[in-house]
Image 1 (cartoon, rainbow, N blue to C red):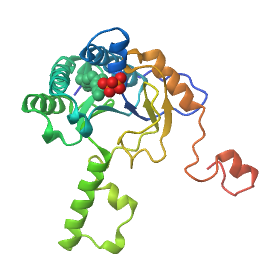
Image 2 (cartoon, rainbow, N blue to C red; image 1 turned 60 degrees about the vertical axis):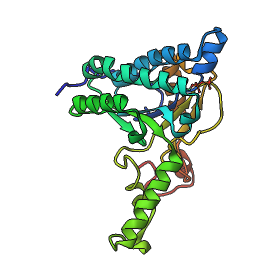
Image 3 (cartoon, rainbow, N blue to C red; image 1 turned 135 degrees about the vertical axis):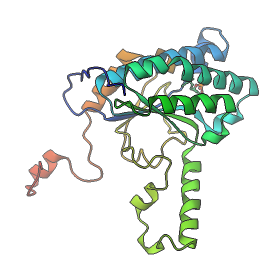
Length: 260
Ligand code: FPP
């Protein structure tokens, strides 16, 4: 087992996000701005993945979830899909050293069976190699779509009801959670989207119900450690209320136990 490197938490004026999720957008635009083919942007995007993974691991982020390939991305031209799958395969082999050095545990999230055999094999090998690392959990969302995840959960839940293994009267939101791909990882605290679009694009719709959103105009290949720090500092200024009142507001109305 590889211990994580010494964790150096940044000094912040507020809370630190234990789970960060990222919609890595803008590789194509970044390449276009440089009159290069789209794959040039995806390759540069891999460099950002490496830098962000390493920084998060060293800062002691518990979980990082990266939206690397959506179920909708299968609609892209075949050539781009194969380039992305080749990049993924190479990444999964080449990054092993960095993942091990930083104590990172890697896990795939999504309809992994849709991946080409070669990429799936390297994913499984890297998952196996890193499974005992006790640093950050890195989840790569691959062939991932939230609606698909929820539909699959509903299907399994209905089967369990039909078989008598689940009482429909007892289903609540926590029951549904147990049918999701990875029910044990806590929800993202901070959800970052690069390249300026103001949407979730079918990413962690259930899990991001109370995530703090941070959208930057920067394209993913330009999102590196300083940009990550800006996002984390912005998170530290947010007040999370989960539909209730903030601690200071509870104190103001004199609620007993406020601040507990
Ligand atoms: C969005 O850019 C990005 C993707 C569809 C995939 C993300 C892939 C990477 C960062 C590189 C590969 C990752 C790994 C983990 C090996 P876009 O093409 O939609 O950009 P655009 O909106 O500007 O066209």
